[in-house]
Length: 262
Ligand code: NAP
Image (cartoon, rainbow, N blue to C red):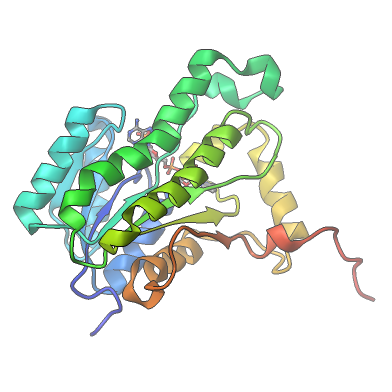
């Protein structure tokens, strides 16, 4: 079967469990014919990521990557170059803030160190991956994609500024790489219950309120995000770069909840 990602080689970061947004992306990519490589953070997750890789077009390329370590980033690109000779797509599905940053009021809990770590792992790492992948992406209509969330919600705290920096990165990287035919975009997903989300206190309330207040009256799924990611990284989206696309059941257009009918 011909898929719209046939012949594309994609590196997928951010698989931590079967519920990870990166898994929804990997499954959509596999269905559309992409060849996949995966990264995992820490030996604890290796087996789990290998299982996901196996069911996504029987991918064998599964590599360790902690984005705080430049040597590991370099190693991933070296392995990919050896196996594939180049790369068409990089998915950045990585976010982190120390747990104590994600409870209480923002200015009560934020620290210089918490701020620095959150920005390093959640925002700088996208630029770091782009910088390292760039030589492998020449002459192939390549695409980089990240996952963001930029609304003021309780307990999200320092992740707000970190995602703002990440979204500015999307625009600056898109402007920088456009002349090389490389596109850079972000997906702003509505709340989804993943491991990262479970670290935010009151996340269940966020899910419920996003569903009731959205036009589609539901939460989004990793399949919803995966399908949009597949489109954005394919040649179907050749004219789109520097954008943040909302996959949020329409939540962000609402100014006020409409009264129930009847
Ligand atoms: P997830 O399954 O927990 O994925 C987060 C990933 O980031 C994990 O694989 C995690 O690995 C990885 N990570 C953290 N620190 C890392 C590091 N130093 N090096 C390499 N990887 C690291 O949660 P998710 O919700 O799918 O998150 C994926 C992305 O979507 C994040 O950027 C998140 O902010 C964004 N997003 C999520 C939602 C949502 O509601 N879930 C909404 C909008 C945007 P470990 O588990 O090993 O730390």
